[in-house]
Image (cartoon, rainbow, N blue to C red; front, side, top):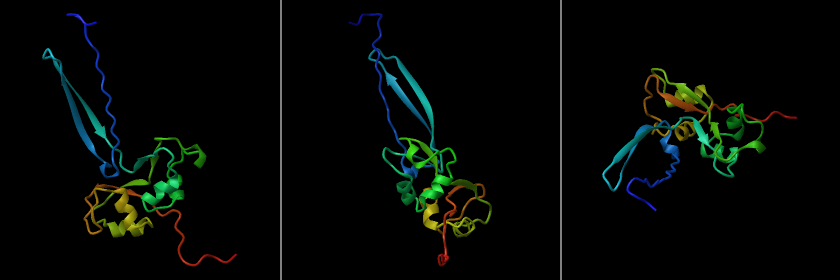
Length: 159
């Protein structure tokens, strides 16, 4: 029962999972609540979505993540020294996609593609803030790069 001097506790749970396009998001979010008697409170939190990181979903494999970012699962495995093996992946585990590269004046997407032996598609998928291959990169702009560390080109060597 409730009386004049008793408080009823009310809890609300908010669940939010950022979408891929929200990488790099920094936002302050405030919530306000008012009681029936007019008392109010506001609480604010700062949200920061890491760029170049990904949260594994239940049952998801590195191969599935790699396909989403137009790269190879070995590239993603190599960017995560903390992983002991493919059979030890945990639900909602935070993994690195690649490396954050601070763009320099004059850098272009095509130049980064060649420098890091990757594809324009891979860079675009990992960087939702870069909307086209012709976009000029700002000096200091952080670009998630998934280097082509596992790329094989040319004819395969004979055995």
